[in-house]
Length: 487
Image 1 (cartoon, rainbow, N blue to C red):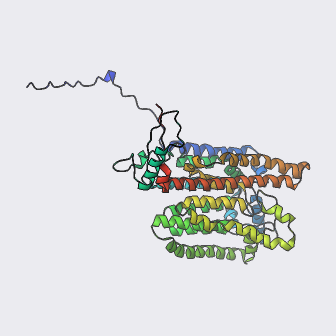
Image 2: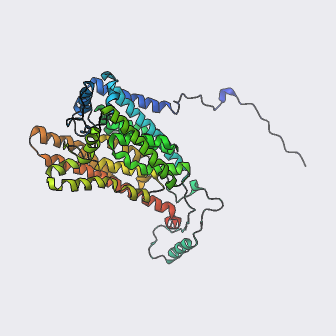
């Protein structure tokens, strides 16, 4: 038998090579850095080339009695002249902010708030990276697939064979299409999140591009300090670092009180990352948090010389003595409220912020980042002095759960409600206080629209998460279906 002829291999001709010349593409980190630089320059341009910061500093959407930079400057003036800033009803912010800005020259104040924004975006980026790694490790049980070919045009209702095959598949709970080792990536019943999932760099860029974040930065809202502490607490929890997480949460709580609700989701995150029980984490984290918060209060006492600052900071947050209009729900109710009922309704309003912590943490135990997003959204709506700085943080956290978008039903209503309120709010406020052609009901009505739009978004997100969890945890009900094949 003749041996097969051997093929001759000719060296490739360089003149006819199909190898394309290398293209000069940016590195994976070049575009995010470029976007960050452009957005930083945008902030600097708006600060130094326009009068927008001076306008926003007086806007009720961005500055509240407990976050106003103008009030901080007045308190700083009294502090520098040896007068306690808590004697009057001007300064309601934490004492430790005073020495910070005492040693910072005024021309660097805007830079400080821009750096705060960049730091928040960086830690949101790191949290988003953690969320992406969790998504890749998400467990989806083996599916049960009933594949029934139906000729196009034939009715599916009343098909007893299809119904019997479906019920049989559900009872056996065995895959009919997938054989051998189960590959989740090739599971036709698992929702494809690749089309809606946002990259971590996109989430950080969208935060810097968020108009609410830009407004808060230009208005120099001191809420950014508290927001940074809360985001850093979540970040360190995703890395399993308990002491730094508790320290950051203590700083955030010290500055604005309401980040106290984040103890629950941070404990859940630490339980997941440290592979231990929630009870062990709780018994360790709460005492440590208390020590850190007590230390901050002790230093504040040494700085202020008395405990008077407690009633002027946390007392102002809890008892709402300043009824300056804002985008919250407190001011109008308590302007109209009889003093006889004031204490009762104060308790009701304040408890409403914290009453959801336990049920939400229990219901979404396996999704602690989602719990943190929900609780920060509830705080942004129902706290005594909310601002757009609160909204910018929780919306960025919700963007990390972009896999829920396809399950949401009221997105159009929620987004349009927030857009309408954002546009009409300043107009109604102007009609009320400046044009004199409206009254307080105009502005309060639009703040109700603002709150209701956010409530619709929260409820829709809760439904979407539960619907997706139902698909994931019940494979027999999820995928027992009829596939229509066109012939």
